[in-house]
Image (cartoon, rainbow, N blue to C red; front, side, top):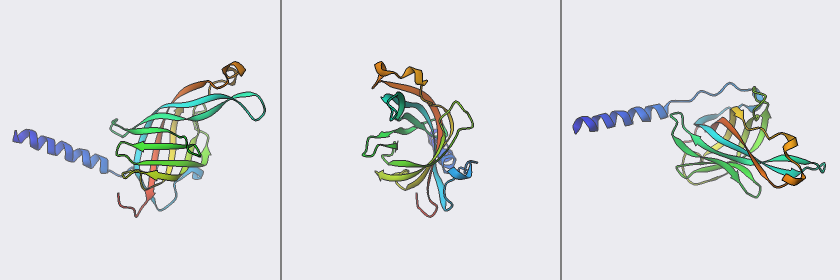
Length: 185
């Protein structure tokens, strides 16, 4: 019994140490770098879909328009820690909700093409609203990088007959969440 308890304490301690390790800032183009004076408070890997709706564009032609994300968030050990979705607003904004109940929404500040031409762009977002208490409650900046997939379907697949239909495009990405360096977590 004592050995199992000691083993459990050691495993828990190692788990805490692994989670407490600082994550290095990613090497990204200057236009999507997080501001100086901010630290990474969470790195989450997303796996899910970018959801598109077939709509009539401003030019009167049918086109796929991004509705929003629908993805699960995972920590560095592969455990599910939250959900990435579209908060319908107003205005509609991408939102990340952690299992601890904290949530942050953001708006895009900058974007660069993904090095993978078959993938959605890399983004820098600024937090616009928060709810709940937890890891995301103090987030000020979010980066989306290391994207794979997620592009809109081919334009030919959106026509008058498909107007209003949705299409999901699988994607993965890494999200880095930043907060003021002097913030207590």
